[in-house]
Picture 1 (cartoon, one colour):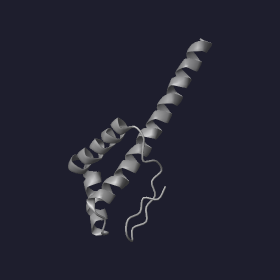
Picture 2 (cartoon, rainbow, N blue to C red):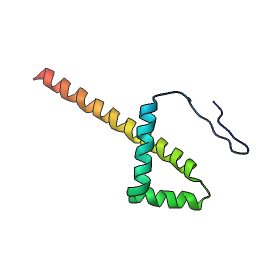
Picture 3 (cartoon, one colour):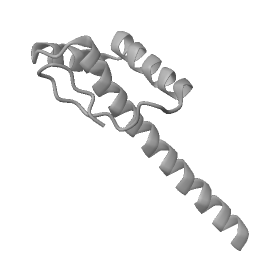
Picture 4 (cartoon, helix red, strand yellow):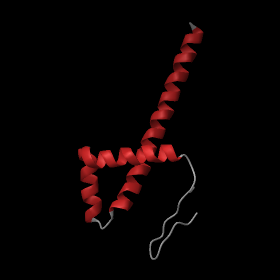
Length: 89
């Protein structure tokens, strides 16, 4: 779905979704921008590239979402391995 404005070209997958989850991810991004040194360095670098705060937060939220997804996938695999080994014993 196009989400462009003026000369900026952007796309959004879905305007709907879980608002509580979106707020939680937004809060994580804001706290990391304030407290996490690697994220602070990233913000300085992206600001130097001409990005504004809104664009930086959008990028951070995508990165955080990928991290959460991977953690959930790994957690699911760990749980599957535990239940598999328990049923053999």
